[in-house]
Length: 222
Image (cartoon, rainbow, N blue to C red; front, side, top):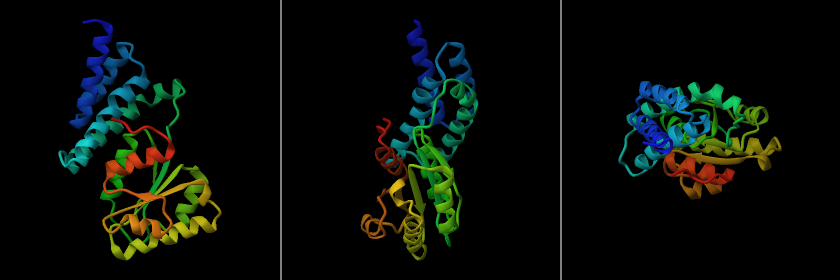
């Protein structure tokens, strides 16, 4: 097996380990890959992120389930932590920045967390504000982090109206032109998103990550 074949095999095994949520194998394969001379960028793009992207496609097609995504995300995050020093040495910057949070009055976080995982799996840096986030905290996060996209989550019909209050607060702060706003959650439709002044919505976590990438100008991973 020549050098190219060896590298390809390692990257494929790495992608597969991420999809299966095998964190120990992910860390071992990253070490093997570095010893084989595979760059940290290749290990990230063609191993870790490719694996998470493929799982995202399966999740969108109802061929994978939430527990699988959670395990894969843990393996991905451990792998990214392992690679981070090498990526910093290589001068690799994030491909875009997202602020995400569940709006005030809503304590649900499963959907938000899935979106966060899929976005991180697309190479985006995600700042997670958590749940029950007031509009002023979103505004402060935009000022602090200068994100490309802000994602607002709500599971309840009763809290969906809070999304418009957040968007209105962003407008009042003079920051609306500097950031795109995506909204999501069970009660949110494309019509509702447009009515509240958002830039878009998506039916599931994988689609939300693809939409964010399109907005930022990145090609969707496949």
